[in-house]
Image 1 (tube, rainbow, N blue to C red):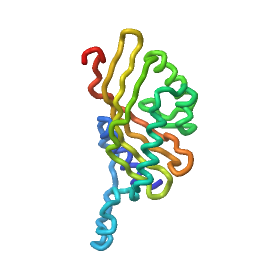
Image 2: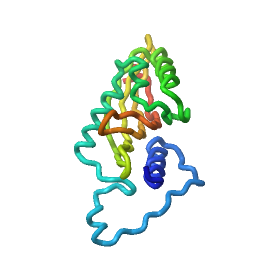
Image 3: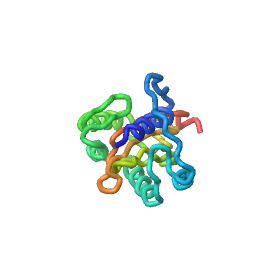
Image 4: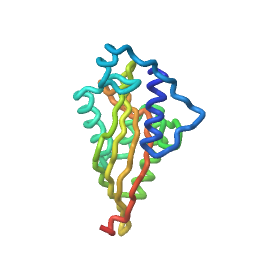
Length: 182
């Protein structure tokens, strides 16, 4: 994984989730390509390789399985690498992820999620990783308490062409409303 791609993904991840990119971290500039090379690379995201329709389909399929609210905490944790950069908790193992998902499920036993938009993808030019920014609609409830809204996510998926897993994830919840105020 190139340092430039890592920094690009981190910067987009921060922006997608409404966080401020640390001023102390600079993304190194890219030298301008020769005119002939620039035409060939027109559709390539800066720092990444082209995202093909096949990759887009694999990402969408993976995200649909990933957001399935019917999974057990163990099944949800299995979607992550052995150690994943997990929300604002830093790098944690699957057992910590399982416990976190279990707590969330106890708090909101009824859950519905819908993948609303995939707004950005950048494939690492040197590995089987892809950075994805997406929006999720959600509706959660416990007894007579409920909430609905949208959340933006930035995620790095590793192994898209074999056994895809989440390597890093961030979230920004926006527009949370009580579901009863429709």
